[in-house]
Amino acid sequence: MSAYEHAFRSALFPLYETLLRRRSTLRYLREYEASQWLPADRVAELQWHKLRRLIEHCWREVPYYQRRWKELGLTPEDIRSPADYALLPTLTKPEIRACFDELHASSWRGKLLYKTTGGSTGEPMRFGYTRESYERRIAAMWRGYAWAGARMGRRTLYLWGMAIGQPMRAHAIKDRLYHAAFNRHMLNAFLMSEEHMPAYADEIDAFRAEVIVAYAGPLLRMAEWLLANGRSVHRPQAILSAAEALHDAQRAVIEQAFGCPVFNTYGCREFMLIASECGQRDGLHLTADHLAVELVGLQPSATGGSIGEIAVTDLHNYGMPLLRYLNGDLGTPSAKVCACGRGLPLLQRVDGRKLDTLRTPAGHLLPGEFIVYAFLGVTSIKRYQVVQREIGALDIRIVPDAGFDSSVLEQIRGEIVKATGTSMELRFELVDEIAASASGKFRVAICELH
Image 1 (spheres, rainbow, N blue to C red):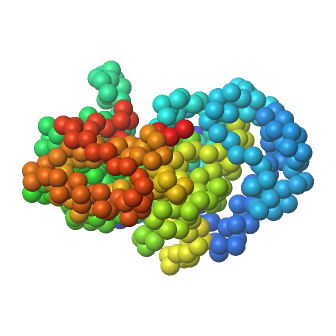
Image 2: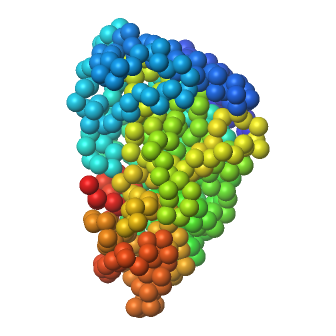
Image 3: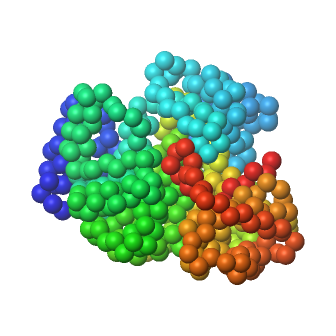
């Protein structure tokens, strides 16, 4: 630990958070740093205790849950164990938009913080949360990032989504001072393009970060550019990938380009960090002492195992509680016990957005990760994207590179039919470019089935 990192953790951050902002983030961080080492059964007991209190609160104070549970003939007395929690209905974005006011707890009206998320669907959703919930989210984030070495105060470069446009001078100065205090440098992932790649590489090299935290898509594009151009940059000690699913094949490319281990994290705007890898990298530890995370509606995967929809409950948001909220992501469960000694359960992997998971004619799910592997051995393609608009066909868009010919299409076809079967029609289209989404994320697989 550097002298600055120690000073930031022990003096500067406490001064900022506790004395200036009057927040309890550090107290919650100490709580979570201790509870992560509880045995698994104790973590489960702690989670159930918090969940039980939240359920009783919702029954007393939240009109939406009072109405919905009565319609189903349920009361808190019916939820006697964690297994009974699945009796309660899940919550979706359309329901939150339609019942926004009803989801507020009576004693918290007028006291909440609010954010809006658009997500992959482009449909904005506003949600509220308490100050304690926010402070705990920050604490859970710092704990999870530290597992991969991204501790507060450590020299870190962020390849992250930022506002586009020129901020006011006073605001720009404030931002520079803020990031300098945290010992970090910000690069805007939304402005990354082929022509700007050399400048981005120069900034990464010049800052000489110990850790890089980045959106998975722009990070992969940077890694591919470095390898294609024989360019090397300063080698960090670790990289954290965030904001979208990172598949193993993509991780390998990034590790080759940057020469360091890459750690996967998982979160969403509604809850911030949900799960993160530790040094073992044998799955992602769920923040089970802070959130309740379930995989519901498990279905067989075309590549083996099972996939379920991720449902999340913030155990500390008493202002606008979102119980069993389906955030649109899919995950694969894990029964492993991590060798690191933490009692927090594992999620084997995040399989991406539900919108990015394709369907086979046989009714199996085909995660975007398989598409990545299908193209893994192909060297004459710059970029690709697979879109499913009907159950029996896939539209495959390809940006060709030097050496591309029809044999490449047959190679791809041979890999994809291993999972889809020969009844799936594969329609190839050669294009000059495939753009990233407005959020800066690039989706290799898109499902438009309704």
